[in-house]
Each structure stands twice: as C-alpha cells, then as structure tokens.
Image (cartoon, rainbow, N blue to C red; front, side, top):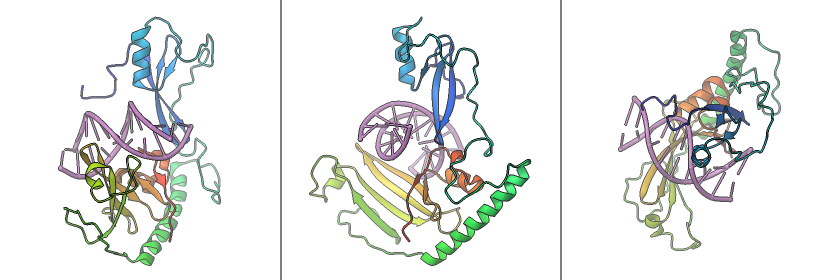
Length: 241
DNA sequence: GTGTTCGGCTG
DNA sequence: CAGCCGAACAC
C-alpha cells in the first residue's frame, strides 16, 4: 500500500504509460489485450466493470498504430532529445556530445538569468507597501505587501464584507522567497473551498514570470532551466515592471 | 487540450 | 500541520 509504483486498482492486462504533450505530463492506462487507452481511473474502472472481455469504449479500431510496433512512449530525460519550447530569440548552437558541454551552456544561461534577477531585485528594492484595508481580519497582518481579491461564487458582486466567511475569497501575501535567489516572490494563496481553508504557497520568478506550485519546482527550474522538469507546469505571468 | 481546483499522501 | 503533487474537474 505504501509503494504507489503499482496501482492495485489497475486490472490485469493494463499498463500505466506516460506521454508528454506540450510539456505537460499525461498519464494514461493502456490495455495490452485490446489496445485501448484510458485517460482516467474512472474510465478504466467503468470499462472493465461493465465489459470485461472486449468492448471498444472509445475507438472502434481493429487495427491501429499499436499493432506492429509498440514504441513505448518513453520519456526523454535528456533536454536535447525533444523539441524544446525555446522562446524566440534563443538559438541552439549545436548538439552537445557530452553532458558537460550542455551544462556549460546552461551555466552561461543561468549566469545571465542570475544577473537579470539580481538587477531586478535591486531595482525593486523590496517595496513593502503595507496596505491593510481589511475590516474583518482576524489574522495578524504581516508587514508585507498584502493583496486581497475576492470572487463571487454566485452572481452577486456586492456585499463583500461578510462574503469572506461564506464565499471563496483569495488573499495573497507576497514575501521574498526563502531559500531562493533574491527577487523571487513567495506567495501564500489563502483560499476557501467549502469550509476548509487552504494555504498554498507559490513561487514566482521575477525574470521569467513563471509561477511555480512548489519550491522544489522552482529549484528544478533554476537548476535545469526547463519547466519540463517541474512536477506541475508553472503558469507564466507577465512581469509588469 | 488547457486551466483550475481538490484531495490526499508524506515528512 | 505544511508542503507538495497527482488527479479530477471544468472550461
């Protein structure tokens, strides 16, 4: 139960496969016997419980690309093996023979980025704009920039005061990210779903504008320079400077 | 297919 | 309890 390497719920004959589309990791389940693939656990379960032997729930194909050659969708761990979503303006010099070569180039790239980051952080100079306009705040406000926004769950754009208790509001506190290069912003997004209060941290790179869901993700990007290695694809917010 | 949220596992 | 991340959900 502890090791999630083998999904127990997965019926025999099924294998777990991964595919990378647009930098997003997609897991799907592949039925070796029939060649069908399913995107979610539900699909597999409903398909297997309803019709165990043979039923073609999705594609009614007797023969498709799976027949002759099962080219396993092996993930490419090397950054130089798949088309990189390089931003315009960046060019790939050559294909690297060794890892060190690639690493050297990455280092250059990161030096540059580091410089940009540093300059950016200095330019901002930690603008601690303290604005607490909240009336029903029961939490101690930190002396950092606080931003509050709320979304009306229903269709009432009014009465924002008491709504904080019944609707989902989002408050974000921005603080300099800890354990990351200067300039990075850590945001604690406080949201309310149902009656549960969530506090999720996000990390924003001021240079690229990527907002990472976790510190490890941010570190991964810093280290490899490729968001493909992140556990979750970061949203990219434009930096208004 | 893409973005968003939820929920749960782990340290 | 907080952080992280997969997966479900929704657009």
